[in-house]
Image 1: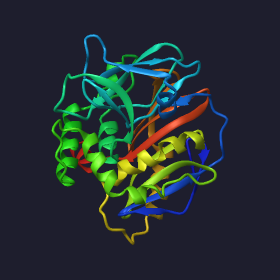
Image 2: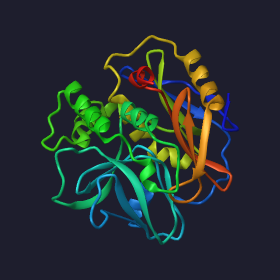
Image 3: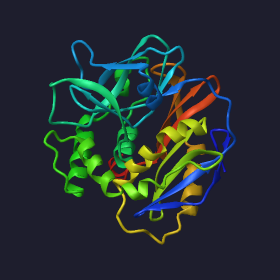
Image 4: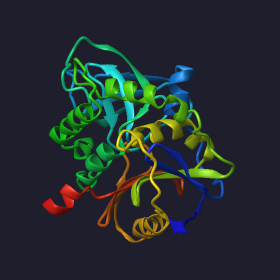
Length: 304
């Protein structure tokens, strides 16, 4: 199977309740050097701060390293005046400040500022899909990557109600902490396999999301958090459904859908998928560094 000129092969699925997790194997590409977000936080090479004055849909990233730092779509940043999630994938240039577009996932707090840290979590696939599907065509203004914030808050509230988790500040992070604790033994099984550069998740016969990276080492840093995010959308009971045909169809849709391209927020060229799927990717030095893709949410298909 092929998409974005990348040949991928589907591996054997691992089940976490009603979520099926399929590895995507492919040839390791010689991509650009960078630090992933988790690596940058661990090494103390990243500083995240509010703007002055602060703005809900933006954060400032200062890269202290001598190489770029990669922050990927859906990655959670906890702290500041409120918790956020990345709207797009950004490769932050070394030793400069980059303003990145984010969405608030903590509606009940603005202020009581805390140091921003990586939460080692990803937003649920349903939230990522709805957010990505509503992005406008790229422009040189970072504000063009703002999300439908009301839609994001509604999705966080839906997750809280669905899982019966109360958060004093309506924080998605509180819901995630509770659910990940419940499924911790199953999440411990999540490991990359040799040659794995991506993951595709399904619920029943439906594909719910795909993430593809240029390096297995980068995927390894994000795999558990991506899967845990999708687990919030899945039932607790395993499914006997066979999603292989749906996966093959989804990969073909990705490869054939229309694309808007333009300068990325940081380094590289951003790619927005528009049509049969919702997707956002980043290409740098001729390498597809990251691609996130989702089915168009039903309510957005009906609205369109």
